[in-house]
Image (cartoon, rainbow, N blue to C red; front, side, top):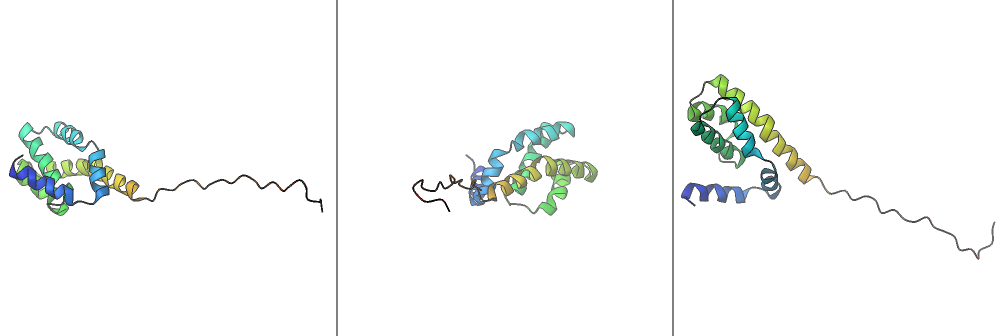
Length: 126
């Protein structure tokens, strides 16, 4: 594991538990590949897209810088970067956010149903 991978793993471990669970439960890397294919990115650009997405997910980068980072790192126009970021938001970030919300909801157990009370048979009828 190189130094960059160690830093990424350390940052991931600092994330709240429910966010880590949500990230691990969503197949976001396959969504990145799909987005890369749809936007005709090269394998190198697809790898940079994945890294930039990791930086946002793990809190290394400010989400407001995402489009600018795409333009710079992928070498695409702002229009293409905006399209990519919209896809990532829809297919990855929103799904992970929903999963976090789901994990944060308290587990609601069904109310314990009690059997109806049966009065003792030896009491007089009123």
